[in-house]
Length: 251
Image 1 (cartoon, one colour):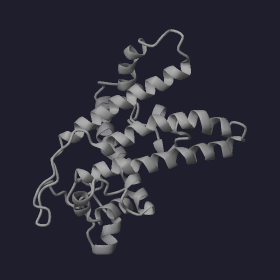
Image 2: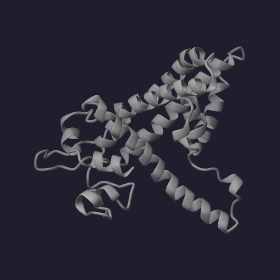
Image 3: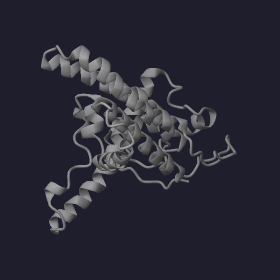
Image 4: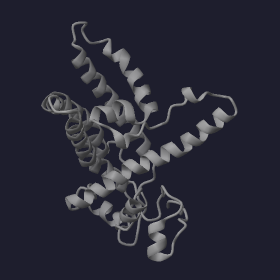
């Protein structure tokens, strides 16, 4: 995580964000993967650490039992497929909440609708809801501030197309996995089958994660003075003697 954080904070994202709406996907392809993976790891850390802390307090004081407090993320880096990542491994609170919100809408489907079609519709509704939530969350962030080279601060826009592209391409990936990847790998022995399915899942997540990274950059979350997912930096310490990361308030 330290290596990725140092890399993304070393780029002049503020200038790129002012000059193009796609600051990450405008980079050479091999450089786009680092920000994409950094968003994944950063999200896990920001959500897992406070969740684990609160869960520990609740269990210690007897307000809850360990069995009723599953981890926020279930080892997502070990996901064997895209379906495994989104349906089991990633963010159980959002997954459970949006899944329940989708159930009333599924009642509108004819009773003759196949289980496969119902699953696709449920996934589409779930990702539509999570897209809306993340768009709303991003509107609460301040726009990039003005600078000497960019005197006019950017306005906050609700319909952030990079966010929309990331979340609404996930159902497409799940469909491709179901109708193409799973059938093509079904006859393989367990190890190569898992390898091919995992390769597709992570290729899809990292490729589409570039759009999500564009959104983060557009909100200044990759700027050098922005939030940091780490407190102590081995890389910065070895290179520049800056072992402890001081949190600077976002301007």
